[in-house]
Length: 71
Length: 300
Length: 164
Image (cartoon, rainbow over all chains, first blue to last red; front, top):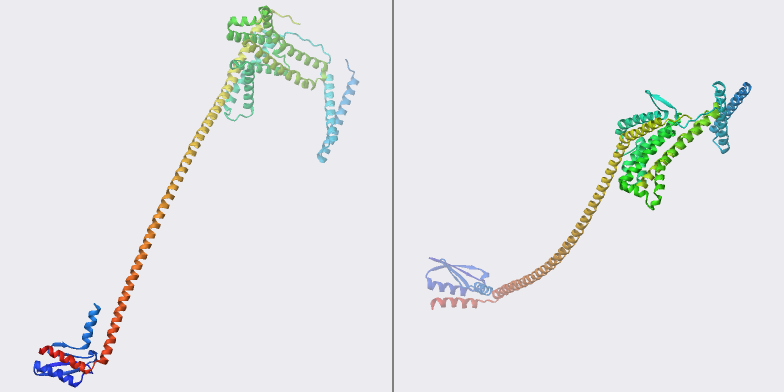
């Protein structure tokens, strides 16, 4: 069975969390989900599945913006 | 003048007393001077006493000589114009000529001594004493002749120098008591003749024989005989002048000696200083200066 | 008076003349001549010394003159040299001052440049700081304001991409 680590912020409701898990399950089949709460991502989620990382966190988007401005 | 014994004794006594008195007084004054220093009065006194002593002594000695050695005053003195003759090695010559040869011998000895003993010691740069005298004498003679003549002084000066030496030695011989050669007419005539020869030699050398004779006729031929006579008179006058002066001096000395007789102790010596020394030197000077003047005249 | 015999007198005269001549020769040869030679030698020596001395004096004077000239010349030379040196020194000084002035100007310019760069750097840094600050504030604000709705929207957008 595949494992997925989903990192979310504390403002994530369970509803939304389930929505995310269901979404992944629809695509990838049977997965066991692990939830990690990290407020540092501010919002959105980071999904790490079998080595692949899907980074939809707000923090990383802000970071991207910051990097762009800095250069 | 014949003296009696009493007079003689009185004379002795007087003179002795006077002498002793003077002696004592002089010693007293002298010791006084030593202690207290002199003053004009004291000096006069000492001098006076000294004179007294000398006079007394002289008188004493004179009396003694007259009394015991037959010194007589007022002797008859003889003078002869030409000196006595002596015979030398069987050859008769005047005594004065002999004296002259003796003088020459003495001068020879002296000159030899000078030349070989004194002269080598002469200091080239720093003359002293006798060397100084010799240098002065010769230099003086040189300058003298040069002053009078100027041209031939190189040859004439030695002759004048030797002439002066000769005349000085003659004066010395007179001091000894001999009749000096210069008081002999023959000798002075010899000197005069040599001078005459020199005059003519230089005159002829300078002007030639004709010139010399011509100079005698210089201003005016009328004077010629007078000039000749005066030229001849020159040597004769030189000779007679010297002879007269010397013999006069000799006569005076002899007279004094004979007058004083036994008392002629000391006084003739003092007078001799003039008559036998000073006077001849003056005559030397005159002779030489006249000779040079006449020679100069002939050269002019 | 004794009689005078002519022949005797003549004899004596001749003897006397000979005597005087002999005396003359003796005195001249032994006394006069040596002393005269002596005196003449000395006179000559003195004259020589005098002439030598005057010669020496002259030479000395000439040398002194030459020497003086030399001194004058060297004095003139040295004055010239000093003047030249002064001149050169003045020129050099002017040059040095010029160079110094230039250098000073360069340094000042560089200093300005550096100061400028510093300012720009500082401004850039400040900009950077401000940007960072802005982003930090944004982060803090966002972490306060972000709602679950926003989360849902993000999830929807993500899956929309995969499904579409």
